[in-house]
Length: 120
Image 1 (cartoon, helix red, strand yellow):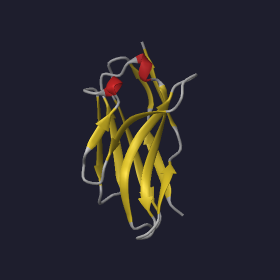
Image 2 (spheres, rainbow, N blue to C red):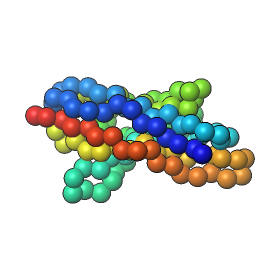
Image 3 (cartoon, rainbow, N blue to C red):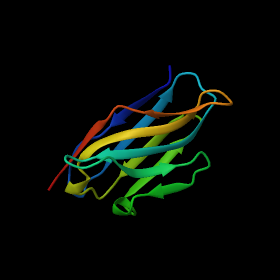
Image 4 (cartoon, rainbow, N blue to C red):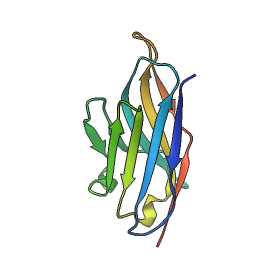
């Protein structure tokens, strides 16, 4: 059973920092792209940042220069360092990963959401 276990999040004041972690557990062949999404109240879920297995990153325009995504392939973990937080960053954050279960089959997985609340 493959799972994505998320940790981190919580409450921060505007201008503060938080760090999210997401670790993949279970039996699988490899992990391709890993990413973070978020859903604010009343909004659709949106991509925050993603990173390929080779380290190529992609960020939403709204977080560029403030958030940094990274991964530890040996630990099957992806991180999201969030600096200079703004109240509009308040949302439930979700981890996502394309995981190759066998050499032939790749599936998309979601971790549990974690609340990030930024006060002004």
